[in-house]
Amino acid sequence: MLTGGATEVRLEMTHGGRVFFWLTSSLACAATIGAAACGGFSSSPPAAPTDDAADDGATGPADAVVPDAPTVPDGAVPDAGAGATVRVEGLFEIDATEVTNAAYAKFLSSAAAFDAGASDPNCAWKRSHAPLAGCSRNTNDDAPVSCVDWCDAHAYCAWAGKRLCGALTSNKISPNDSPDPGLSRWTRACASGVGKTYPYGNTLEPGRCNERSADAGAPRAVGSFAGCEGTPAGLFDMLGNVSEWEDACELAGAAPDNVCSARGGSFDTLAVDARCAFYQRRVRSTAEPGIGFRCCSL
Image (cartoon, rainbow, N blue to C red; front, side, top):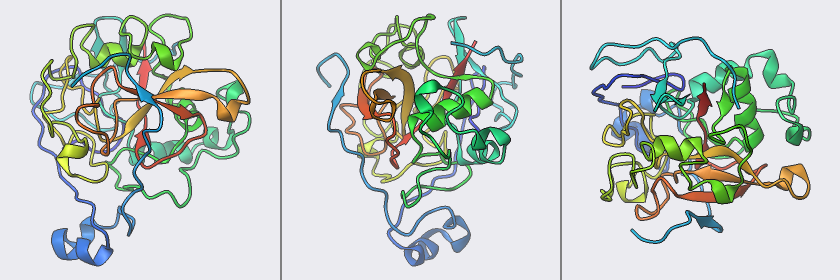
């Protein structure tokens, strides 16, 4: 089971994770899986994110220097707080999972969380990095943080000595560039370079990742879907669970209303849409139950 922060690992590992189910009431949850497991869930299911504007450029089924990451033995589960990384083709490193609630809570307890808007001039309108109040989400420590906007994601990654995954080079990219593995770090990692449609291969396998056909109905603990592993080994949940903010934005108009890219789809995305080239256009200030993030670094 992967727990805690945005865990990362360089070597191939086997994984068996806890699985949580979203139930519509705390009473039903307690009766089914035990009261102790229910504390991280709100009493109502999350609202489904709208796919009002999504594309992937296809049809059919920046950087902070960080310390060298530790490695773990084959088959071992990485220490959630160790800061290990998955290296992509010797070009950059990416978090092995989405950033978790536990990791984000450490950020919120730091001074950086109170300097809202400082990490990017387009976020000067921000006043708080706390997840959106009243937004239904899985709050278990090992679940991906959600109900955070682009500026929250950007600020966390800067605080962690990394950056929100964006352009493969020093140039900025827009949402329209997101599907291109030659331009987008996120896509490069998901597609195992330039070759794969899905992290696990080129043939769709519904339910392998936490998209709609998996019937989870909510984000689950990071790494729970062991089959949703990519290459390099140890890279989990690039598709499904929660969509992930990308540093790919259009800069026209007022900063809070700039359109940015959210990648990979969520627990509510159709399986046929959940592929490496998939992206959704979301206003920078959007905070939804189905959107989280992960970070990249050198």
